[in-house]
Length: 76
Length: 186
Image 1 (cartoon, helix red, strand yellow):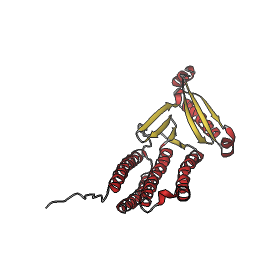
Image 2 (cartoon, helix red, strand yellow):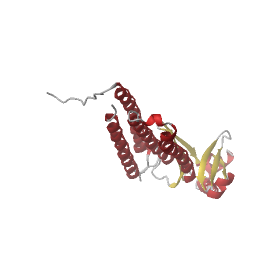
Image 3 (tube, one colour):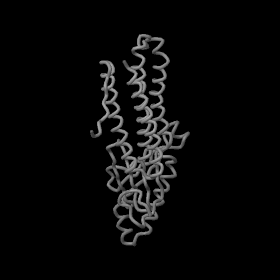
Image 4 (tube, one colour):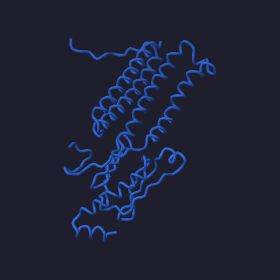
């Protein structure tokens, strides 16, 4: 009963270590990305350009993230 | 009228917005491309010179490394463009405003009133500066201690002329007693 957070179940020590490194680096990259987008939205002169560039960047970011998660799952 | 910078007055006219010459961004992107080429180099040459990294066990780790590397490459490119886009100088009929974004967490706004302008110097330096017509413009303040610098701006000679013209118009539009006071400070 109640929502459950998704769990990560590494199948081996290699996947566990790789997973930790991967997610730590992703969190750092995500933090820097959010801060960059915030600075762009706050100080940028053209909101339309800001929005366009941010959306393009986030599409690339989450595509790469998705690919990384797939690669991580394939590690035995 | 939408304000371009904090403190912009209602009747203040924006004369021009200056960004660094495109060559500055080009130079930064060339450096970024070195890292891109490094990634392609790793992909092409490590299977030849380090075949032990391409065993079936290690291939996913290499793929993960390249994925994270690409992620940070994209972040780097985004931040490069952002730093170029957010660093501007705004010239109005009353002052010069320098907006500097030196990093994600560093945003500085400096202003120089037209009446404090003492001297303006524009320079084209070097082979590339001459070919692509970019350079620096130095605005000396009345304090003679420091100067406002526009780095790597397009057509520095034209910018210098425009700043001097604006200064002349600014002084000319003042009341005679104010005009005298400004000129006596020189």
